[in-house]
Image (cartoon, rainbow, N blue to C red; front, side, top):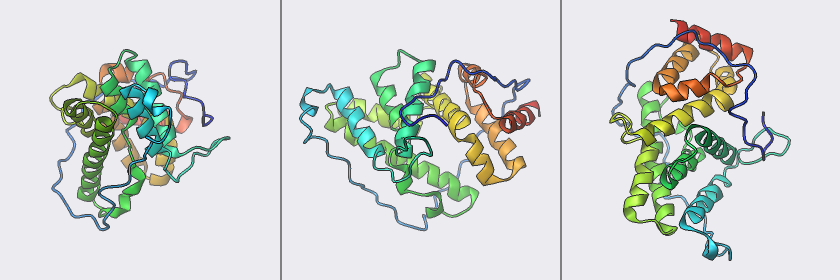
Length: 251
């Protein structure tokens, strides 16, 4: 686990795993909409940073980034590090770090979408939707729409045009992924890399189902571009993760 104020080293890992091959997998199941069990807040309070005297000197990008990070800082969950920090802020920093590796010349709008990928996600827990496959996909789709709406508002309030804000929202929703939009694919690659690097071991332990975990790894690999896969090969995975990845990608 990295220190709270340290971005993960994503280009100098010492134990790259070798999957031994790749396989393409079917598209994700497209669910119908279901009604969540709970009613999470549709319009959460967006942090007000305008009282900060530094805001008037910020560029619109800096202002939007500050608003996004202020929202992340509200996450009550803390990282298990020497210096704990809100988990979603930690996640956002990891996303930015991998984007810097994959696409150092990324546009402001892509950088904002990457930073806002899990915006206030903790307010809509998985168990607020039915514990079914349809419920899971509906939860994910609802999160994407909600997070996109939140970051669009933050962008407009920071000085971006409605059209620019809508582009950020579309990236967060991955609206153009199937149409081959390169920025959306980059966002997908980054999210997959952060999952493998930072979330895999805990997720696998909590799931406690090797067959399902192998299936998830197969889908993760199938979603990445060749450039994303190249970077994934550099990640220093645990021995168990390397074993499962080998199983997933050799089938």
